[in-house]
Amino acid sequence: MQNNEAPDNGKWYVVHTYSGYENKVKANLEKIVENRNMQDYILDIVVPMEEQIEIKDGKKKTTLKKVFPGYVLVKMVMTDESWYVVRNTRGVTGFVGPGSKPVPLSDEEIKAMGVEEFAPVLDYEIGDNVRVISGPLENFIGTVEEINLEKKKVRVSVSMFGRETPVEMELFQIQKI
Image 1 (cartoon, rainbow, N blue to C red):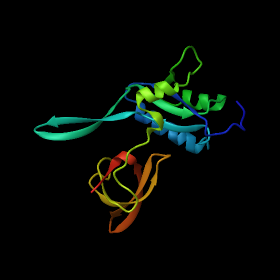
Image 2: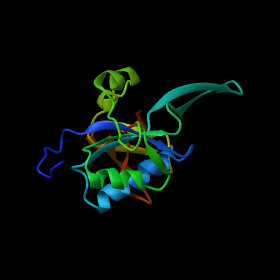
Image 3: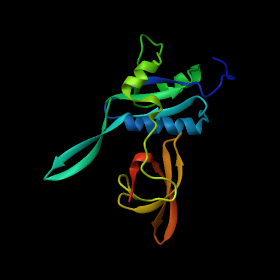
């Protein structure tokens, strides 16, 4: 592939990881993409999750469960360098496909997996008051400042130590009050 290829035409590939390393692989890949300035080649990294409702001690608890344990989905423009970066990320055992040639998911497979661009349905918008429902700032209250659907991130202004602090989070880490 040539470097002048349009960066927005990546395809989804399935990457096999050590079991339990899916989120570490996602975080490691995101760091590498940022450090090596590869945003035009590795476009999105997703660990498909689904909500699961558990009832313990009479209390309803919602947890996120991996849909495909041991796998991470990567939307990328396949070049020698992008293949090398993903393949040699710590925790990655290889691409899914025959031999050493990665095979992108077809549109039908993507739709069947419910992955299609992962357009989330948000119940909040900019200016809404929200509660952080997971992560180190769980139960903090804040105001939505920015929503970035491409990166699947939201910036929330949270009051910490008496001052407003902008914090970037995953879309699913907050809920409208």
